[in-house]
Structure formats: C-alpha cells, structure tokens
Length: 493
Image (cartoon, rainbow, N blue to C red; front, side, top):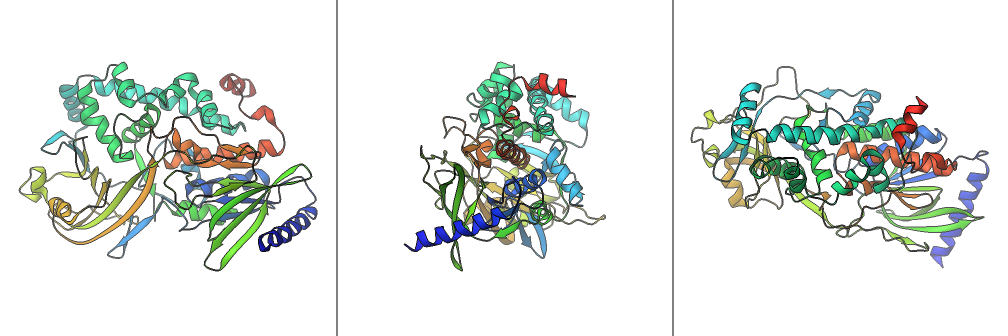
C-alpha cells in the first residue's frame, strides 16, 4: 500500500509539472551512472532537448566511475583509464569545452617480458625500433598496422553520422553502418584468426599482440577482432590524458549541464502508461532511505551484467526486459610506492634498467603490465624517477597481488593501494550483440561495450543514445537505423 501511495503521489506531481511545461519536450530525464557514459549522455541530452529539461543523474559511488585517482604521498595518480588515443574526438571536444588542458606525456621506453626474458625491447631511436621489429617478425608489424588503420578509418565515420543526427537502436546496426558485415563478423571472429588471415605471423601475435591485449583488456588474442583492433589502435597512436585527472571530464560535464546528481542506488524501473505515453517510475535507495520519481526518458549508463549484485529490476514491461549480458573481466590496479626488483627482469644493477613500461605475454603470470607512472599534475621541470629510486608503479593484474608476488617485483616498498574494477566485458561470454533501446524511451548506453570498450567508445555510445532518444521523441524515424549512410551523408553535404 505504501508503494502504491508513493507512486500515485509521484505521478500527480509529475503530471502537474509536465502540464506547466507548455511544450512538447520531455519534462524529466533520468541517467543511471555518473561515469564518462552517464556524464556525456547528460551533456548531449541537454544539448538536444535544451536547458529547461531536468536531468537527474543517479550515482551510487563517486562521480567518474572507472575514471578515478588514488592519492600516494599527497600526489594523485590514475587508477582507472589512464590515457586516450589522439583520435578520441569527443574526449578532445569535452576537454576544450570545459577549459581543461591535455597533460603532456613523459616519454619512457617499453618492453615485452615473457616470464624469463624480454622478447622485445624499445630503444630511443625510431628507425632502430622498426629494424628490430622487421628483423624479429618480418613485415608482420606493417600488416598489423594496415589492418588496424583500415578498421579505424571506417570507425571514424561515426563522427560524421552523428554530426548529421543519425542514431542506431542496436549495436549491430551501428557496426553495420560503419563496416557492413565485415565489422559485425569481427565481433564473432578472434583477433588471432583475423591477423593470421592478413599474413601476420603466430610468433608476432604471441609476443606483441597478446601483450598489448593483456595490458588493455586483461584478455588474450582469442578475444573478438573488433575489440582487439580498437585496443591495438590505442597502442599505435600518440596518447594523452587530462591535467589534474581524467575524472575531471565527468564532474565538469555534469556541472556544465547543471545536472541534479543524486547519490543513490537505483533498484527498479517500472513502466507506467499514461494516455498512451510511456512513463518510467524509478525507485532508488540511499542512506536517507527510499525515493522515487517519474521520468519521460531513462538512460542506463552502467553495465548490466551477470556479476552485478546490485542489478536493476525492470517491471511492468511486456515482453519482459532481459537486460543482463555476460560476465565482466575483473582487473586489479595496484599502485606500489617502492623500489623495483630489476634483478627479476635480468638487470642486477637497477641503474641500468631502462624501461618505464613492461608488458607481458600470455605465459601463466600473476601480472599483465607494470608502469612507472607520473602524477596527474606535473610541473614543467618534472622528471620521471630513475630505476634505482623509489617510484610509484602501477601494476595491473587479474587478482590482488600476494605478498610473495609483491616481493618478486619489488626489492622493498612503502605502500600498496589497490582499486578493483569490473573493467571490461569478458568477450565471448555473450553470444549476441545487445541493443541500446530496451523500450520506447528506455536505453542502455553500455551496450556498445560488448563490441569494444574504452572511454571514447562510451562517449560515442552516449552521443548515439542522446540522438536516439531525441529522434524517437520527435518521431524523426528517418534518422534511425538508416542503411547506406555514407551515400546519404555525402548528398547532404
């Protein structure tokens, strides 16, 4: 009875507010999640529907989601997504709009470790690096580069489509518009299979490709080719991050949007039909108790996966909404302030250890990557710590590091701080590509993660969902799931 009374009171208040609106735009929009997807979709929704729409953003944790920092010795370091590709156009635009600054990268050398020795070592000379790649692997690295560039060239079409207002109701439709059946097939075929087909050797896949995928996704070359290609593109391009911390983009977008941030866990979304128009009744709980409200549009901007204990119940929908996808890949990020044990990597004298970043191959190992990282704020005269000095190292691993494993990697250490993430989908654990549209005006932004997972991909998904909501609201169906968009866009120019 109490729930029914609350529902009726909320409905009366909502209808009263909607009646005074005086126009056809939505009255209230709910966004569940304040990571990059949620903050970006709030921004894009306001861009399209105007500043008079109330946008409530629900976040059970801290704003930023998987963009987060950890403090070590009064300095802040990235514990989530650390950097962005130079082709991350939405992220570049956010940084520009918010008056933030890209943070300069402090260059350091990389190497790939096999568990016994380094299979590949970067030098300070580009031509020598190219010669070494050719000497060890023939032209495999060139074939890889051409394959990745072809995928990225087609993926970049999405920005043109979005600039013209086109949106897609499902991940398969979006991928097909970019690369036709080739892109869709790449979500079913492995990275290894695709690269072998274009002439990349198995040795290069085992030594180099697997190391990059382990560092970015914690997964192997058996993962789908499309997600792998996006990850490998990040390894080839110039990278950047945000001065002061990448999470500033999320808090900045929410502030710019004047979104109402509600620190609560959304427990259910219930469909209520009012005069043929769907309304969504959102219930949530926080320390103050339970709350609820009605919304015209609801965007779920958080993963809906089988491992999520605080999953959202969808009620009153016919047919029922089966939103939960497969499992997510757990990743542990450990920030260790200490002295690297360079002897483990074959350098008894720590002064001679030349690498700032170590990737690992697919051998059974307890860590995926190891990086000598810089704080999110660096001065003009900043220099990276030398190997013999105590530095902050970022270790990515599938499980929390044991004390014995820490002793293997470090001679000694002052502190260890960890962040555990359900970082990326466990590719292969979900058979079909999910849809953005769960109902008329109920959307799942993170559906795109099941094709590829990165900060920029979430921003692309946010723009798509905002356009999809807008086009559906005003019944502009010619802007949804259109075929042959390259031809259409050219004729519109």
